[in-house]
Length: 365
Image (tube, rainbow, N blue to C red):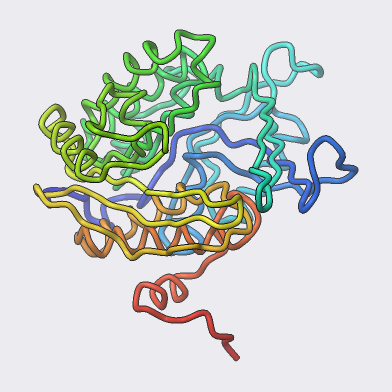
């Protein structure tokens, strides 16, 4: 594949993520509406990728984000530091004591079990990162002076505000100017777009960003909602994906955006909240690749599984330059991440390598 990745010794960071980091409040096995205590985690679609690349795969990563400077912001910074991700690119906004101007985002998430699906209730309006503009970040310094091999960002951050969409566009343009590979997770969330123009606005923003993307990640709904591509012959009533139609759609996407070197997507069949079929496919160099499959994967916490897929995929592409191997690393890392609580991965590289090689779940002593 034609991914030109800058040499490691020429860059300060292997990967940098651009996006929001929220404080996740997790009621464990209980429910948000009846909880009396919560466990705190940090999480965010784009950030989770940087953390996975650092903690599981050992790469040097950083996050471009913003916090209101108060105790919650300091807690988020501390959690990020515990994950090994560099915090030097965080912008701090003065806090007015009440959050009239900027605040830090909260994300209440319950895991679900069996027939009860996972539930999320975000409290992220007016957050510091949604107020951050393209002029608040010195992209020339980050990509030109420091040097970055890979930038990852996504549609969740792009949907937060008009300024965040413009910040993403500026970031991907500057990354390409300095020879940094760009990956983007479409990650369509109807709730984030509904009051700012809906699907029409999502397509306008994402079509502009897509011009600068090398590795595009998204599921069927993402490509339809964000870029306007439909899967022919798909049985939407039964929610069964027509794979032949999907393969043709990916071919159409590649023709529309020849800058896409890799298009990757996870395929998840939800049997219950705790049992999913899990696999992935990608298109690269005119070929379709199918991953290792995990039928009836038992899940503890599905949140962040797609982000861990993305970090495994990126690691594989950066390390091996092999689409099949990268896809397998991605789907295995995503599967392992969903066996532990929280948004972020607790897997190790040895575990991922073992599963890619076909290891069982026998106890290790």
